[in-house]
Amino acid sequence: MKHFNKRVLVTGGAGFLGSHLCERLVAAGDDVLCLDNFFTGNKQNIAHLLGEPNFELMRHDVTFPLYVEVDEIYNLACPASPVHYQFDPVQTTKTSVHGAINMLGLAKRVRAKILQASTSEVYGDPKVHPQPESYWGHVNPIGFRACYDEGKRCAETLFFDYRRQHGLNIKVARIFNTYGPRMHPNDGRVVSNFIMQALRGEPITVYGDGGQTRSFCYVDDLVEAFVRFMATEDAVTGPINLGNSTEFTILQLAETVIRMTGSRSEIIFEPLPQDDPMQRKPDITLAKKLLDWQPAKALEEGLEQTISYFRGHL
Ligand code: NAD
Ligand code: UDP
Image (cartoon, rainbow, N blue to C red; front, side, top):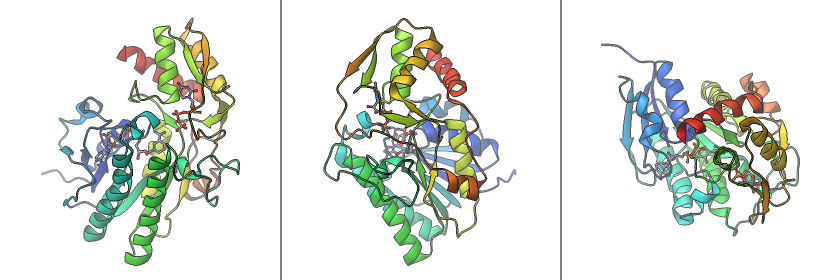
């Protein structure tokens, strides 16, 4: 019988990032358990892995306890786009907080390493630019984004308390905007929205004046960082920012997508959603130093692959 490297649990494994991570781990010879409740993820994302002997799919909600035997856990389960996480905000907080408690409890019982998919949203609408890990953030605790931002902040608290109290081997990754194939076409995130609108010839909806900034990381680069982070020694806990540090305005992104798709869509301006951060760009000094990592793919290269995925989707 073939033996696989290690047993790895990926929660949220049928989602955008999770499916790419599962693919990478299966190819590396790990024994992968993909867990998902299919709230925003779907079986199509991992259908190509179902026949692999080292891939297993389990329907489960992380807000309920889980008893499995694994060596490593990547905790990605949580809706990530504002449209989805604001659909049922109470469930979003539960997923982050109860989900973290359950997965940390599991890690403690089986002494597994555990990586948390945290977010740049812990910095809120930042007053420090670019954002280093030492910045504590500027988050509205009662706004529409709070269920996600505060849920993820509380999950970080739990990770560090489990570390201090129970000596767990934790890895906290603060992910900045990431894009690529298998993003949900209707999840309202800016890259998927603009590409779908451009391909359909619909108006490109820029919120506010489009002067707000984001830095976009291609999914393969992020997955590489995940795997490197998981492989670090016990003392490397993070938080570590993971993202691309090249910053664009949303208007620049709209113009780039229109040009690259050859679309005749016009740009229209709509109101800026509440608490929408005005600027965001990671300081990735720590990731470069501790993971020997930096993003390799430029925006236009990554957009090309993403546009061709969405063309196929249509
Ligand atoms: P996604 O919505 O595609 O994936 C999330 C997955 O988690 C989905 O498959 C969903 O069905 C599953 N899920 C949600 N609630 C669950 C629950 N209670 N139990 C089990 N499964 C559940 O989003 P994504 O972009 O792949 O994000 C993955 C993780 O990375 C999330 O934790 C997100 O907060 C984090 N993150 C993503 C980005 C990004 O730009 N993509 C940025 C920062 C952080
Ligand atoms: N945005 C936009 N038009 C859209 C969708 C989003 O102008 O159709 C803007 C949004 O207001 C925000 C930025 O793009 O300033 C990134 O939005 P997204 O939801 O992708 O991620 P987040 O705000 O969480 O970074």
